[in-house]
Length: 304
Image 1 (cartoon, one colour):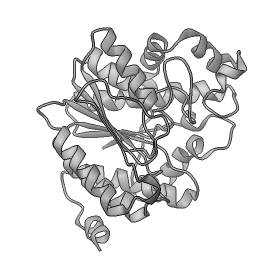
Image 2 (cartoon, helix red, strand yellow; image 1 turned 180 degrees about the vertical axis):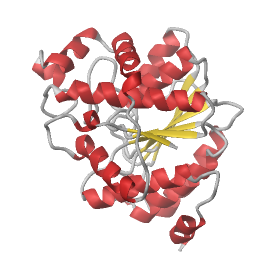
Image 3 (spheres, one colour; image 1 turned 45 degrees about the vertical axis):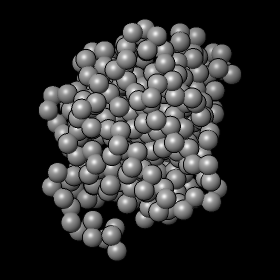
Image 4 (cartoon, helix red, strand yellow; image 1 turned 180 degrees about the horizontal axis):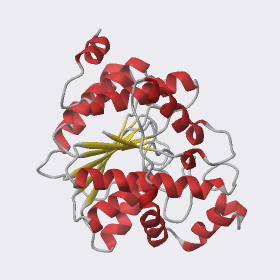
């Protein structure tokens, strides 16, 4: 499995988990024998895609810091590293999409901070929605049916703004399957093939009910009959409300439920203890990397 990353992924000066965790994930992966690839060859295309589907005033703001209020709608202080980060991490998503279009079973970009950003502004620690831009790229440039699977703790309302806009422009090849434990950035699905499940009892949600729902929603709604590519937003911020073991079990189930569908994995929300956060993201990569040659040691560990 190709894993895309370069130092621009962590270019911003601002110290925040979402902006810095990719560097720590890479360090942990290298200890396990993994290597990463620089998506720099896709940077020009990423700049083109970002420019084509992002509001010009907002794009100018995150490039220059003017106007500063708009530039900081993502929720953190602006600096010149912000645009370097989003351009390169978007390039990683596009390169991962090309990988699976060209025959790979799975590919990954250590991109993060995506699904709340809209075409006009940032939101919720998200600046440029390269998850949505990747879906547009796969559907318009490669003519693929795309399912965005979003299992971040929060709803992907920013992504859905892109999807609705694409449908108005005649592109009906993108849909979203979203299971969230908190209602932040919620939205109303406009067609039956879009699924948003937010738990009514999210403050008292138990691990078993969450896992059963994820499995049921994916099993009933994603298949090769309706999807050519899955873009998986692998949010680990359901922890600590739910256990770390539940995050790992979810990743085990998801990697297997999607094993016959070309999948691009990106890293979504997760905050707090960096060591634990990195371990959760590393589990996602390990399970997806081995999903067609079962990693029995990991599975046995998770099952016990």
